[in-house]
Image 1 (cartoon, rainbow, N blue to C red):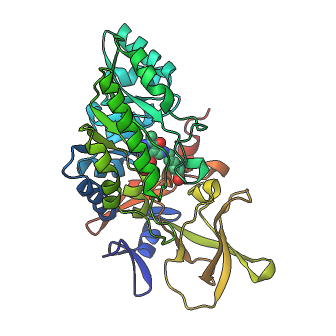
Image 2: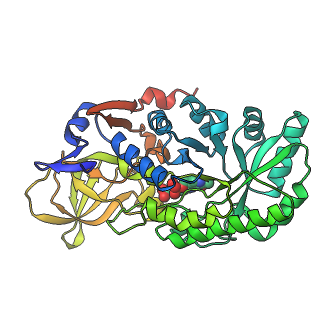
Image 3: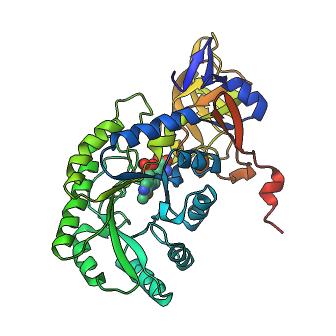
Length: 413
Ligand code: LLP
């Protein structure tokens, strides 16, 4: 059964009508399907079966505790990108040896905590950072497990704002410098280089950049081995894209078939950091139409109660999210700009969409919003963050209640 299915004209999430959920929990509302996340997790895990691997779910895609706990229950470990995500990971039940800590610009406080916890690895981004890790760990009489994030100078051919693998991007240690740097770091008291890491971008829909990045890691691991430095793992990051517009995208099996033959040669444990691929398709944002306005050329503005505060992706990356009526209506089609209520012209969820002419009160579903949706929400215009609901075994559970105005001002004096 597809996750989001139209039954007798009404979109359902795993059997529950979205309209009913919107009535019960209000709008704007994020609805996630546990079943979809479980299926996607198994797809990736199965694809890599037969080779020692671990999925470290990229919490940044969606770290609501209910989602993090669900992913953990499937056997996942975690990829945390900040001190906050480390703490969320711990609260969700991940143990320190199940957490990798990635991210540009780790603060001293974050590094102290990561070192004290004894994470699986701190994915270090620069020589300076590695030196700071060494100094902290040595001063504490301990050894930090470090993976070197390498920048392989590979074009992920994704949106430039979410491409990270070019030498002009701020991420990682240049591949050309990495070997020498590792040699310089050899023998540092506070360090143990346990892995190599790369993440060349997100929403990658061609396998070639991912394959080439894996190749770069394997080559470097071999060079290090020849120089007497043996590591434990290769971390090939996340990045596998999903189909927002119905376009064909690689499957998890195709991904595995493309990178495994390369990685196999190294014999090293494999870490994957998928985010979007696991949760992107599992989520829908439900919004209600609050106003309709005609615009030039017969087009309509369809103003809904969700916008850039709930789902930033269209505004930040020009990202396309399918938008449909939650309840089918038989009205003539209209070309619509589906916009939010925020005081910004960019506040547009979908431009030039052909929809059966919406009316005030209609519910609209914005699809594939499970990744980088709720996590990127903001309180701009003093808008409370939306509620999030997880559908599992025919039941809907609030995994994040809607913020109240009291929540919003709670930190202020
Ligand atoms: N690992 C690292 C080090 C990352 O930086 C990321 C994502 C991931 C894993 C997970 O990547 P994924 O499998 O989800 O592609 N806000 C943007 C996406 C930013 C991705 C940032 N890094 C968007 O909405 O498209």
